[in-house]
Length: 503
Image (cartoon, rainbow, N blue to C red):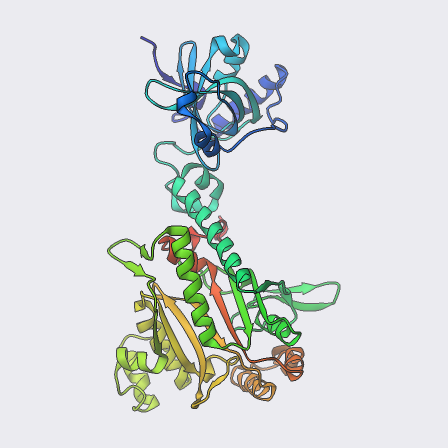
């Protein structure tokens, strides 16, 4: 009976990483001395392993040779005397290899035994099915494409250290099938968003990520200095004001899918660099945007996941079945906090907020007191898709006032899984009112030494004065949308390389 043993070079359980690294550096020199390039060349003709599997015809296996050419990472090896069984994996699938001394010859067989888990190989061979029913490649030739100098994490448990998974995402993707599949889903979701919008007649555009003013949202920006222009610049917090310039210029349906940057906190729902899509449609309004995102998200859920119910574990199921709930900000607060909330005095609202455990900064304006209560006591409870509409005008300086009450603006915040996924507006196109709101905001937030020219985007106002059509606009947080659709509970699980504190 043949003795089955793990490849000794791959067995690193009792060796330090430094010892393994030194051992493999020595192997590099041995390979060079033998005339073998440890960091190989181009390898033509390979197919993804899942394509090879799908193309195999079992009914032809006994009468017809079916060849296979694949490339991937060596993930397991079992030496059995004059034969070796191994596993190779690429981005899509894994397949077993059978290496026989008679087929390869003595020297090449010895070389294969010296390989390590993690090495990248190019394989040419013939497909067959083992007695155990496993599709396998009988290896006719093997090319070393890249020598792995460091060991992979322990193969039976994958990469389980959460921080290491974020810091060394490449190892997470090698070892954890779930992570790899989640990111594939992210890429498909983004592709389907683009496809949907293009089918609706939208065009994708690009606007500056370095801006002289940080506009389009209220957030703390990252600052830099542009040597060529001798001026301070900002990483954009939103592309809104530039996209609206395009509406002025005659592009009627536009979107941009790109990065925004906000120099603020990090937690399971916030990353300072995040992906967002902003969409604008001339001659529409916020209801146009509500219909658009409802149709788009439900269509993507059905197409990518084949279902309308997303399981987030612990009994929490998010149903995307239409229609989604629509409720005004005021009615929601009355429903959850108390029907008399807007009838009591501002002082009484502060007292009640504190009694509910909401921490308030001294001197906070009355509308912000109410919004703190909304954000701390209501927002996280909105698990099923909910459009919260008609927000106070002070909260959204770029939106059009409601026709029946100018104290509120014609907007929505789409809440799913207890977080805002998308805000949408009936865009303000009155340049006189827009200038007034910018100046009111400047006066509320000004600090000693602040200049109007450093805070108010005059060029945008001039563009607006040339005439912008009425429009609906919306921003969608892609990272949060992916979290919701995949059931991920942390933004770091859906961002390939999240920001991390320096070691």
